[in-house]
Length: 635
Image 1 (spheres, helix red, strand yellow):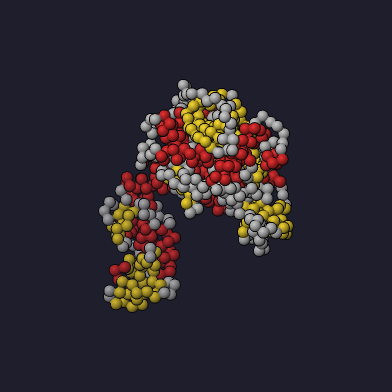
Image 2: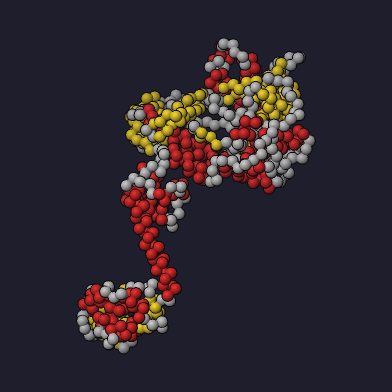
């Protein structure tokens, strides 16, 4: 005696070894002995043998037309044996019954299971919907396979156009395009970015990194929404000064300028003048919403994304040759550089010059200050400001100790094509703490601390930078900034570039004009702006560091350098001498931090933004007291 039964979703046939009424002891075609409940037996038969039954039934089941079976089947629930008898017109053989069972079981769309060996035909509407879904899946599978083949052939499927950012940065794995891309990546042994770059979906590796930043932080695109053009306020008192700014060549958002006016009784009246876009639009305006959305200008080598529209920047930037609305902090400085008095004003300031670092530094530097140098138009004013900055620095008790540190600047010529895409990068070096750096930094620290203290004294809330225990944070309450050595520090000097400064400027203008401040104490909007600014500012800074690293690797590839010099930071971490690029060298033997070494460049990757290098030799060990660790000041 043989039996047919179902186990773990599969049909099996076996020989009965012992019949114990409620249970059977059987042996399967593979020699396995199983204790089987009689209720689980679907078919008892004497011939053919178990293996032959399954073999013949499986072969003959493929010949049965499932659509015909569905047509001739009644609407009521049925047992497979009864249906087999009706189908064949006679009491079915074991093979015939098993054949019908296997065919019904293989078509769950047409026949719904209702129990062991029992079925019911699917209603016509449900069947049609299921068949339509099956056809849709078949077509989708064919489309996925076609897109996969195109990608492997180096072609970008038409369906991919317009959705490359979603595919790269936030793929929806339910979409057929993503399934095709993933399958092609597996077959090609490439990442999605490398495969799409190969297919021409990305113009260059730079586009991959830049577009990811836009996708994450500017999902609506870079265009500004419509806004009413601001007008520079009229009727402001005109300052009797000749102000000038000091910036690098690429600066367009000129936030600060200075003036030096001799006083009748000796000494000078020093002016620190800050651009005042807060006079051109109010809190709650469309332009406020724009600035609130972006929160800061985002910088990267060769490009920047401004917080405010160009029209607004052009209206309020401290451009030479015109009178500009500004908030001014005046210092009455005696001949011995002591400050006799100070005053803050809202006014119109005539800007007579925009000085640029590359023009001024050759004639105004540490060498010319100590040993004399050529005369030039602004020498007297810059020297006075330098002397005052030195006194201010000493007064803070935070003398600069980073003169050995190098700052790097990036210039990208987008008109020049390279093997890695558009953009030829030049990396310049400037020693940190130059006279012009100190001059600007000290006067900005003074303005930010003075105005922060003014807001605090009159009980008007502002946004402060506080440092304690080495940790810097933002807060709405004034507190000391230990790193700078000041009692309080409220960013107020860059309102064209940072929303925090714009908020503080609104508050400061209200204090100076005697009007109600836009943000009241304990304002939830002020706290929300603080929180959002911190997150956004950190994300923008991280992206800037990432892109500087990217362009450092582009610079290395431009040089086609086989060997290069570097300085050991710690352990196997090194930093290049001529570019701000740090990376690990696994082959580096134990070295003193600050040791200069020679490396062999073995490879680089612009998508992963990594460099691989091999240690060659040690060129020099550091003198005592030298350190490769970078030092930072916040100003």
